[in-house]
Image 1 (cartoon, one colour):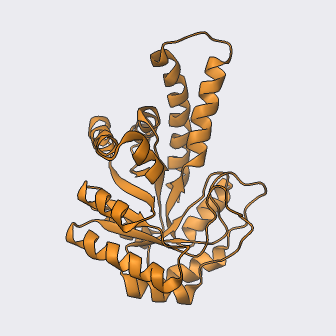
Image 2: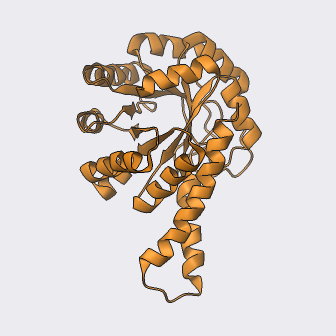
Length: 273
């Protein structure tokens, strides 16, 4: 099943899918093992920085081979594509979907960029996610508020014909300094206005009941990244703290298993509706 079809199915059934970023072989293995244990589908995501770190071809092949080897249903997605050139590279390398993030551009420029990506992606049967509003990225001021508005979202959806829309409804990337207050009423209104599968970025640290409530109101894709990196690195540091072990093949699996535990929990949470 194509990813856009699955997202539409989630939308119709009031459900969601977990989208997880991976950064190396070990985090990929941890995610795939969790998907295998639960028997639940997962979206594997790569950002520009991860692509530059691993290399596009290698990262893509790792994901494809991993999905096949673990017998897992999943898709490969570009997260926060920041240029047409990057989106084009990923489309031509067989990604199932790409995100083009023009959210910090003026509305009409965001629309223009998104339409250009949609036009190319449609030729290759690749889905497109876009973003509207302001969801603070790492290092940005999370107190800046620019929520996605239903009327603007409807206009954007009609103009671009995107398959999914990331919305600004109170979340932010990275860990939260205080409890985030999601605008469930806004999620519901945008979902009704656009009839699009909506995406929640910045789920790390959002209380589980709020994740479930967001899904019930129209969120169909839950992005998870920061918790994966943080848990992997903290587990690795703990394993090395009082050890002189130099064999990474003995040390890395301990951190990988913790990622599996985290993703197993998150997969069950997202699919508990």
